Image (cartoon, rainbow over all chains, first blue to last red; front, side, top):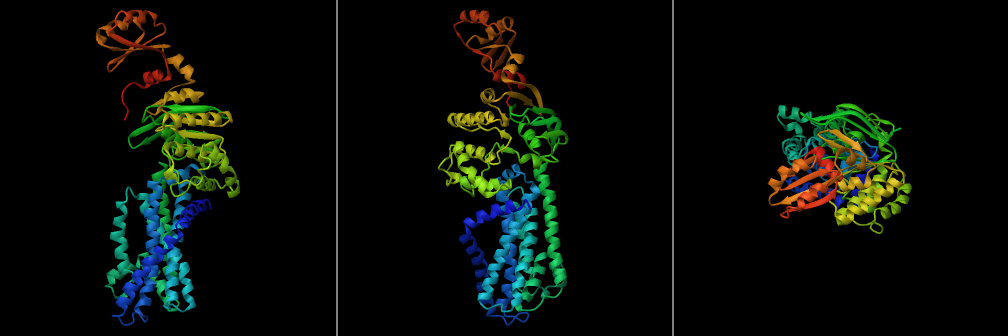
Length: 249
Length: 302
């Protein structure tokens, strides 16, 4: 549990900028949700048995969580690791690089969870989700956060400079968001593309969150959770390998 | 028990061996200085001894703990002042100390109680709420030193503690480090300021190209490696004089337009120089810097 000190360090910094942080947490998805959801939603009949705004809100909950986890683990993490040398200072204490990356990943997941929870609150306030089942999106959001924080941390410990992240963002995250059912049902994609989406974590997050927002129990829960857990675990394992190589050799 | 003991330490980065078979021995309570030109392997040696990077071969024992196997346990009782400040810019002066104390799993009230004394020691009393960006270079260094003391360490590791500081700031750091030595703490520091090494260190090791080339107290090193007197000579007609100087002194060295003459008895040489008013000379006792330059050469290292 030594990593908690690292988590706590990031939490204390975040607490200083609490208002600004929560506002951006809120503003980004809200703009998307109401801009696209209501604008586009007015042109569309119900999608997958729900209003387009509600449909898109569920997707945004996942993609917003993904974005926060990724930004925090990559850009903020890299800044602490490379720019500020905060990790170097922590390593003088009785902590190891394993503790540092664990603390960073759980922190990024926590911050992402808060993003997801904020979006959920908006969704609930606007009456887009009425079933009590919707509360279960909270643990899902944390799991989505962990998966993307762990993968983002792999990028961070591999990165030589800031440009490195734009490859991952442009070539992986953006297309993943397009095909994972955030904006439209992934099932209407050509089967090969759908197959790609199904091995990516975001698809499984959406597959869990959307039914819960609509008030149904999702199907294939175990598989969806398993995929997210595998991404989190594999990301953590790879982070350890590359972080040890970067810091201990 | 030694405070730090390293034997046959080796470390390569790619094809370049940075530490090549280094033996090191630091007694408790000692202020030990590791001297060397840039790129000699000083920082790498410290990182290896702290368990921050792993040696290719060799054994390290730090405060009785084998490193890197139990480096974490050893670091509980160690403070580190790195070459480049890495204070946390997201926190104030006081918060830097509080947050750092948490990395040692120290209870918050205990850390909080230590802060005023540490700020005082660092000459930062009343500056607890200042932002890091508002501190001068000297203040940052002192805060980094205070941060390294948060766990009341037995041993302090300092990598070039005064590089980049003005003389006032440097003297203040020296005074604080001497105070720590008097309190019984063991200090291991790297430097390339001979003056710093001469003033602070009980014992020194001169390091070059990954290995130690001499160890001893500053006086011992001067006595063992160099003649006690030095003449620095320059001016017109130097070349002609240089040819004769070789016969007058045991060791004569030329660097650019200056000739360094090393001898135990310089009276005959001075008498000779007096006959050449066009030559300007400076007579001084030999210093650690002369030893350093003799052992590591005068070539630039960068």
